[in-house]
Length: 307
Image 1 (cartoon, rainbow, N blue to C red):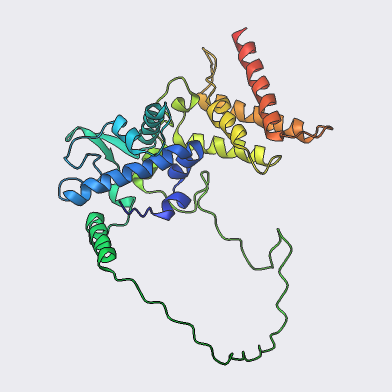
Image 2 (cartoon, rainbow, N blue to C red):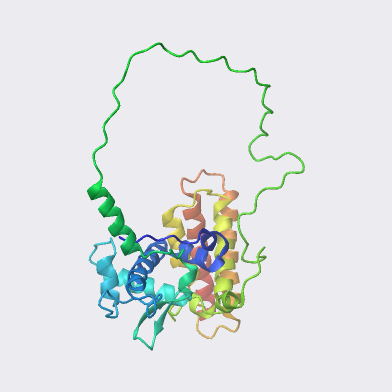
């Protein structure tokens, strides 16, 4: 058993970490598993292993070892773990350590709260206390006079709350973390460098030709447009948006930049949203309909350029 305490500020204020969660929640859960595996080696030899993904015998762990340690037991569990490792490496959360020939978690001491005692020692002490603990004797119920409760004091009528969506004058809404375009908290030098890295290593996707910051802005814009007609954006629509439409490569010989093509895709999604908004018929899944319209517009743009 390994006790892990992730820094919640990372999930709410770190745009890179939030981008990973938005793209693939499974990769985020697998990252927690890797942190637990790394902490197990750090408890055994903290002077040598900190963030290194090695076994208890200090053998470098492979992707297959990660897959066996994860709770997912499907046939494609190794493939899913490989995809997660590639995403973590692209986001700068995981890197290959040439010195020890193993995977290494970047900024290891950032991801968990270091305890004075290793978790293995705490678990052993906890089990020993449970073993030595004697069963407690239950108190027997004794009948007696029922105590009378003093009357409640008369309280003034509470101030009525403002209607939903409104706030009293002078009260500002709490911040929800920095925005990708206008962050409220300055990024450190290392994080700023990651924001300028390619969003993916897969050359068959558009994200390989734009930066992490550009991808985050693109996703926020498109997801916000879809949520204007479908506040609860379904998993199917989110999957189609992030994995298909926003990953369409520009046609061969495209004379503009990849960011220009990404803006064209975002404009196509805005057109689909506007068409659904002004539609006279009621649509059951408005986000899916808007994405279908956007796919048609992007397909027409590809055909026209190819012609």
